[in-house]
Structure formats: structure tokens, C-alpha cells
Length: 64
Ligand SMILES: [Zn+2]
Image 1 (cartoon, rainbow, N blue to C red):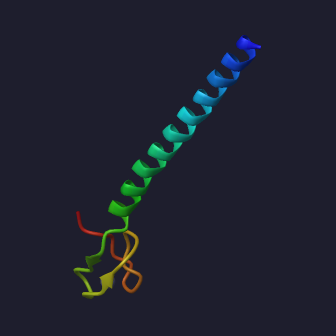
Image 2 (tube, rainbow, N blue to C red):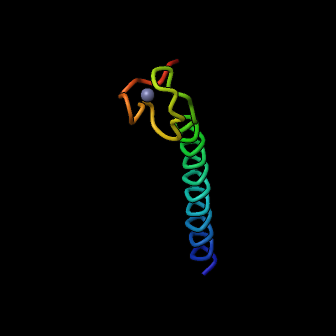
């Protein structure tokens, strides 16, 4: 019975660890996506692009 409880504890700990690891990984990817969707002004037509790296009006790439 003691070994059974120990195994349950190990599996539970591994599960919690995996969940924390995945949520931390997702947070990192979220902040990366936020950088990608940063707002910028198109130098060609002056349109304020709110998402993406390309102007939807004149198809100009986001200046770096
Ligand atoms: Zn434009």
C-alpha cells in the first residue's frame, strides 16, 4: 500500500510539473506573438497596421 501511494505521488508530481512546463512554454510563445502583432505605421500610405507584418492597403512589408 505504501509503494502504491508513493507511485501515485510520483505520477501526480510529474503531471503537475508537465502542466507548469507547458503553461510556461505557452506564456513565452504568447509574448513572442505579441511582439509580432505590434502596431506600426505604413511608410508608403500611412495606414496604421494593427496586426501582421504587411500593410493590407498597399502590400508593403513592415520596416525593420
Ligand atoms: Zn500601406
